[in-house]
Length: 435
Figure 1 (cartoon, one colour):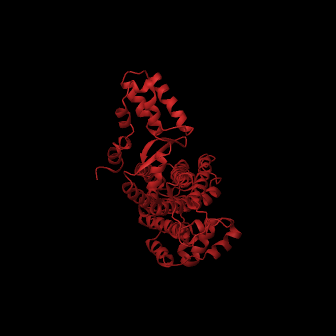
Figure 2 (cartoon, rainbow, N blue to C red; figure 1 turned 90 degrees about the horizontal axis):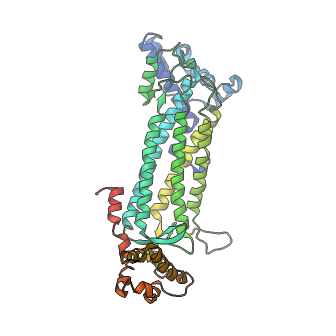
Figure 3 (cartoon, rainbow, N blue to C red; figure 1 turned 60 degrees about the vertical axis):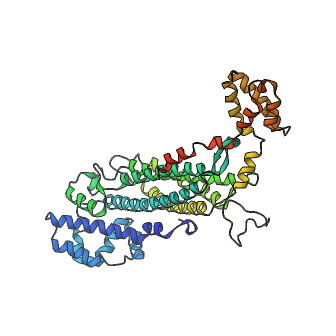
């Protein structure tokens, strides 16, 4: 995790103190359940809470022990015993390391998802505001990067809103799928620990018991979680790329906010670069890059191995911290985005009316021309306009085969910009609802 691309609430989920606190709570809740079913004394379970619940774990001490034991959970349990004393012999009864590690990771990813869902909510609010602000602001629609037919800038934002609404639904589903608890002991058979312990720990931590945990929680769940983060990252990149294209000098229909005193280039003082959206494109690549290792973690040996462990120690924090930062940055970009309706209009007018070619084509077919002939008539008048050799409407009026089908007045009516925007309300209702 790089501090430049990190936000404190998400980082805190992954810091050692938070991780050890979750480990401790897993062990202590398990002791409560063991006491309740008569496996350990109730006073011992109480002592485990009383003697360690308010302590700050010594991370350096745990690291020191691990250098000898070469085992992180044993190092933690050894340090925990230094607080608890004699009753520590009841800690970790019938459990295995994966019970602690996997359940902890589930808690961390669940909490991370809470933050990411809130991030998407904030982004959706920003997008919705700009969508309604520019609901009827005409803008050039492009296919293959080439002028196609008119849209509105509000529709561009509505498309982004619908996309991130789907992202939110996916995150909610991924969070539900990852939030499982495994306290089933070696190879997952519950031979040395009662399933009621798992049920108790799961309830206390807001998880559900994993139906079959072997010795680890199945990694298809984690693969789905990180794949979802990858999809969200791709949606971030799609919107960031749209803004980057709109900010190009030749287009300049929208632009990232450029603050007082900001510098765009060390060499060229005039530069105003889309640095935030370029940064978002790079961050999205990083998050997606963590999806493949998560998919490869699914295939573990038999009941368990630890080939997944090193991967998850990195992608767990890095993917969630990076995506959290990226969502917050994109929200800021949208909130402060500078929109230039006058440039949008200039670009709409740039091709001398060619954006209305389909309307002319359809009108000719309605007047009896074959589609093939209509296409030929329209295209032969459109090509000179590309070469800056005339105005599209003027050329059409002068074309004998076109004028034989359509009067000057009828042709002029086909160049109405408002025609293309007549269903904007319908689309908005589909995306945002009646309100």
